[in-house]
Amino acid sequence: MKIRIKFAKYGTMKYIGHLDMMRFFQKAIRRAGIDVKYSEGFSPHQIMSFAAPLGVGIESTGEYMDIEVLSMTSAEAMKQALNQVMVEGVEILSVSVLPDNAQNAMASVSAASYRLKMKEGRFPIEDLQHKLQDFYAQETIPYTKETKKSVVELDLKQGIYELTAEQDGSVYMLVNASSSGSIKPVMVMEKFCQFTGMTIPEGACQITRLETYTDSAASDDRTHRFTPLDAVC
Image 1 (cartoon, rainbow, N blue to C red):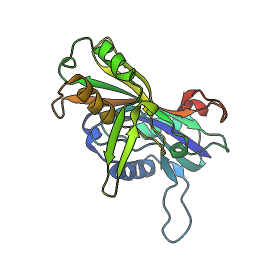
Image 2: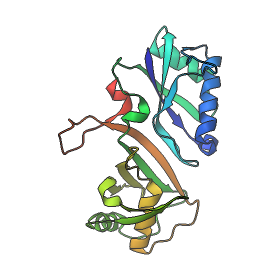
Image 3: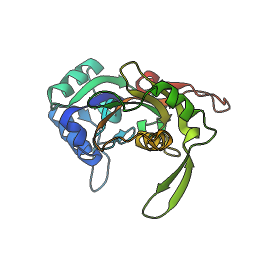
């Protein structure tokens, strides 16, 4: 059976990188007594797939991973067993059985929502909502992404689906998170700061991934229909 697990990551655990989180869950699954399926071959490993690696320092209430199991009593029993072996800062939110034809978590990701909030107070700018609207109203938002091997010119506007200010002074955004056009929230805020002349001290803003989505719209549909990854089960 294919199983999709939704979990939250917060507190000091936000500083644990993706590879260490994989190792943590491999050990936790063994301690919880989950009848997980292993790959075949010389070096068998648990069949496990994460939806979208989370950057170090980012909290989340919408992380997903898929595993395969040989047997289970119930989804609720698995959730309770896993939560009993979790550390402070990681919580299993749901466990669901996937249809046999479901794509794995990583291949399903199309978008992700984020909340960006100053750790102390509000963003240092007046009329935040209007400034965000003016920023988003631009025809293009060019961004230069530099890697070790190349320099890529992007148009962030194509991958920003929503950008608004919330009543508590935080910034909400829904952006492309697919493998072909992933946009990080820091990229959007970097360009917004340039647009407004705002300066944010390093480490002063807490980023939280709220949810991870797949696009359930038909392939010939030009509009998006974003659905949380646990809603496809």
